[in-house]
Image (cartoon, rainbow, N blue to C red; front, side, top):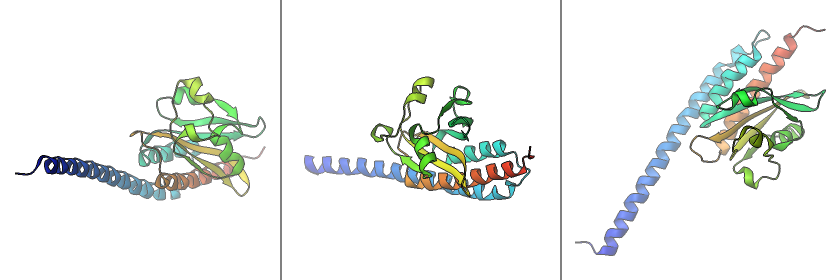
Amino acid sequence: MLPTDGLHYLQSENARLRRENEHLKDENRRLRRAISAMNHLLNSLPDITPQVDAIGLVYALLEVAVQAVDSEDGSLLLLDEANKELYFAAVLGNYADALTGLRIPMDEGVVGWCLINRQPRLVEDVRLDSYFSSRVDQLIDFETRSLIAIPLALHGRQFGVLEVVNTRSGAPFSEDDLDTMQLVGYLVTHALAQAEESRPSE
């Protein structure tokens, strides 16, 4: 018969191994979702034509992206250069109605930082990020915990920013999630560029 301390050790190890096994299962599921998303996104390339419904394609790409990064809330913010604002043009999630059409200054928050600096940004914990602005959260009664923002620019032309907010699991976004979103951003940028090129000149 095992001593009490030996029994406690085995029970503790068993519990630890079960937790590690669940973590590995979660990571495996997330990896499969990401691979599936990558395949879907690559298959979307032929859809990026001058005749494309850009916003419709953006919604389709966002749907794939938020699933791949274990989120539900994604947004496309387009740049209104004349008014120096970003506005929510396409939104997924429970707050889509409240957010769609909402405007913020083009230099506000993490999305503003990404637009101005033309760099993607992964924020694991918004409470620790000095660029995060809680104004939109307060307006729609939401709590942002983690986010990824991707600037959308091509050949010097800035279109806006792509953003995903909060994972369903509550865990922060990862570098792998950032890679996925950068691919989505590339495709969305090209869809918007094609749509702009096909727009009749005034």
